[in-house]
Image 1 (cartoon, rainbow, N blue to C red):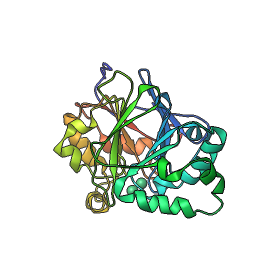
Image 2: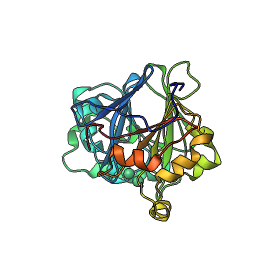
Image 3: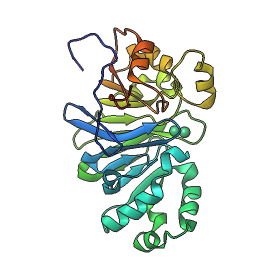
Length: 271
Ligand SMILES: [Zn+2]
Ligand SMILES: [Zn+2]
C-alpha cells in the first residue's frame, strides 16, 4: 500500500460495528470479526459468504455459507453449534459447508452427531456431507466465484492457514494464518502475500518470546523482524491478549521503515 507515510503502526483502521465485532476496509475489501487470544476468533468475508473460524456466532456470521476452520481449539470452534443452528434455520436450503483440518474431521463430526438437542440441524442437513477434511494445497470454491486455498501452519495441534480470493483474482484478498508461530512464513514469506494478512500475535512483551514459540504462537517481535520480507499491503495483528492496547503496541513496535502497515485488531476506542 502506498500511503505516502513512513510505515508504522496505523490506527484506528478497524472500527467497532456495535455488534461486538470490528470492521476493517482496505480499498474495496472488507473483513469483519472478532479475535481475542484464548477467548474467540471468527472473521467474515461477506463478499464470498465465508467465515474463517467460528469462536463465536453473530447475525452476520450466521449468514455465511462456508466456514473455513484453521484448527479445532475451542476459541476457534465454540460458535459452531450456534452457527449450524442459526444458519440452517434462518437460511434453510442455502449451502452449509465446514472445511476442517483433515486429521480433526472425524472427531468434530462425532461431536456434532451427539451434541444434545441438535436434532433440528441433523434433520435439515447431512453433517457428514457438510464437514470436509482439508489438507495443505486443497482448493475450495466459495460463493460468487470466490476461492479458498489452505496451507500448512505451525501450531500446537493440526492447523491450517487460509488464502481467500475473489473471481478473477489470482492474488489472495486475505490470508488468515490462524494460530501459529512465524516459522512457516520465515521459510516462505510469499504465503502471506495478499491485500490483508491476518496473523497470530498472542504475545507482546519482551521476555515472552520463548513462551510464545513453545506454545505454538506468534510474538510481536517475530512479526517486526519479518516485516521487510512481507509483501502484503496490511498486516493485521490478531489473537492479541484481551488486555492489549493500541498505545502498548505502538510503544513496542517503535518506528519501522519497511514493509506493510501494521493494523492491531483491537477496538481503537479501548485504552
Ligand atoms: Zn486461538
Ligand atoms: Zn489455537
